[in-house]
Image 1 (cartoon, rainbow, N blue to C red):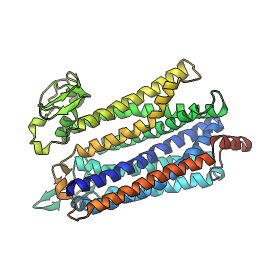
Image 2 (image 1 turned 90 degrees about the vertical axis):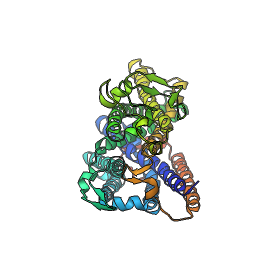
Image 3 (image 1 turned 90 degrees about the horizontal axis):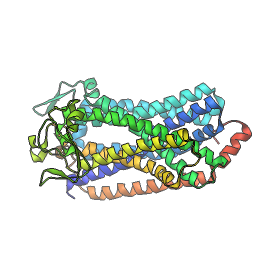
Image 4 (image 1 turned 180 degrees about the horizontal axis):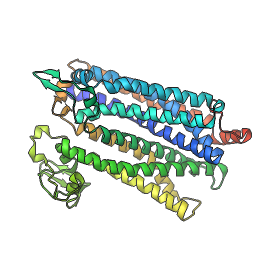
Length: 452
């Protein structure tokens, strides 16, 4: 790999690793909050035990998310000094505010963990709400920098100098609200389906109708229903995102859909692979006029094609596949929740068939894959720009050497951290099975002893 490719690969690997923990770190607190609310409403100790166990998992994942996020911050300065020069002058607000968001999240999670049995129920709920808000705010604030890269605002560059800086205009750039909403909704999808995957696996390991089976079944239904609801809202938000691309990054939308010619009544290409030589999407399914409607809520909307731009400014055409994979997984996850609801609530079936349980187990990994595909799509679809139409990726990269050595070292660290977090989680929950927590909760008639 050349120098620029190595820099991109290193930072991409870092973010690909960190985003797993960051996303679960946003989604899981909402699931904990839902379990706590259900416990306070129904006094069903199963939900109190869920909240306790998910909190323990959250603490372990947070312990990995913090150092991986720190590495990402260091690499921004190390690998992209040209970019950081602009960000330091124009877009420093999100980084500054994010410190307070993390402080709120850490503080109230500590209160919930260590003082839950000493505070009133309403205070437990308030603590979890603030944890969820803090986690969401951290993700939104950092992702806002990415939104700024795609739709820069709040400054001008004149003769190589940054002038007319307006930090708040840069903060509330044109894609801020759509991007922030997408980040939050997709994180909640991951939180719900990760819980559902674990619950489905545990259900397959226990006899139908037993106490522990019913415990995991409640967790499964909670995860599937909430995950599917947020998958649906993510799809609606994706429609808004397409309209933002149509207005501000038309070549990215064109590459995502394999549209080579500017046209009205543009078709939407589902599946297939973009062929740059033939300038078409091969083996795809075209829905007539659908892309025009997606872009502008009208079938006669003129959608700009790649023919309007020099090939040197085309995003990588494989983003069409990434986009389809992300959308396909999201649609499948919506279907998971609908099937579970119909089977369990409408048909009143006590047992899911084995093939369906296997599908539910795949929900968590698939949701994480969708996040990875979406992140890669968002970043590579902006290429060759770091800041769209302002700063190229090549101009923002470092000129320092030995990046290959650093790439190998950082990747080794991620492998070690990944293995460590899996082993810690397996070790803890093997020593503290759900059966023991349920028995303990019944003896004390309370699910409040989270610190034990």
